[in-house]
Length: 207
Image (cartoon, rainbow, N blue to C red; front, side):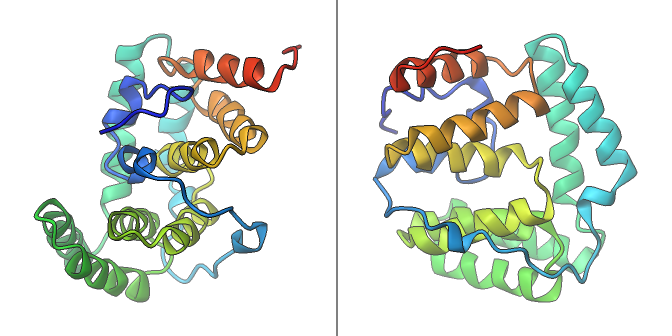
């Protein structure tokens, strides 16, 4: 995987199963704010999950990289569980298809998930990854925004979005995303350095 310099991927990015690992491969088209739409929630609201809220409180209070990694792993476990056996099976099938390079098949499977359970955050996040692997960056961005409309704390989608902004040289937008991530996980390894690099790139003083 190629690196794009300014935004050095931390250990955090390497554990994300979303599109974070892919965004440095090419420069996408400009992001339109019109894509930031709120989707209707007709299934279980992940952001209303009490267990998840507790875990995010723990993530905000984490003091070191080990604690961050442990809590994030628990959060991913919650996100991956749709609450329905059939959907969980589809998630497994779609993930295997992506790993095998069968991207169109993966998109079709993840689309079944988003159609059946539009409030399930990881369906959108996984399909965003598949679309990016296919080279359909606009569709990938649409799904990132849908992911964040359901769960605004989704650090996988946020990291991917920040990476895309940086690859597209939209540094101010990237800075907003990364500073928001600092509120979610202030002890995220490397995140403070990434924010500082953007301040230097923008030639502004952090107050």
